[in-house]
Length: 241
Ligand SMILES: C[S@@+](CC[C@H](N)C(=O)[O-])C[C@H]1O[C@@H](n2cnc3c(N)ncnc32)[C@H](O)[C@@H]1O
Image (spheres, rainbow, N blue to C red):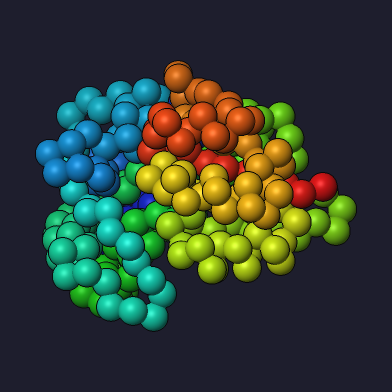
């Protein structure tokens, strides 16, 4: 009998924001393969999962996935592909031995998560292996909740983009939509803040750092982030209305 891979959204940080289903599946899986952004670094998703489920005698694999830009339609960096393949190979070995594997991932697996790249790589190795995706509370909803504001109402058009986009694409998106969620903002504040200022959108923007985690911080004056780089877990919501 083959095992199943579960890509499990563990939410944005607060263990209470993990779903009952995620908890049940993590409890049941004897193997967890958790993504880590830094080599030999800790996995945030694993930390969240462990805040809810006892690791007991589970086999826990922390796997490094380098953080490099991925553009749809373009071949990813070889280092990134290598990390996906190595993760997929380990998962396949467990599944073929009949062991279920959980891949805990921050927030929701459908939003900028490595989980889906690993699934694709896995299907290329073994197309018939069962995979289930367990949705989670995204940092997007958690950030809006922390800021106490909606993402979109009525006929608002909402878009989610990585702030690492070049300025032309960012400007176009900010012009076209009523509500813009900018993720991966922490390293680009020096060009993002002047752009928002130039577009008269600075007072419509809110920066949410570490939503739902200890250390959560809300900044409505984004110019402060020019001198003090925000945490990696930071999201900006720009809502025009
Ligand atoms: C690779 S994406 C993962 C998104 C995740 N799958 C989700 O659904 O929230 C990482 C980005 O999510 C955002 N993020 C993740 N956790 C966050 C948190 N607790 N508070 C604010 N933003 C967060 C940041 O913009 C970060 O750069």
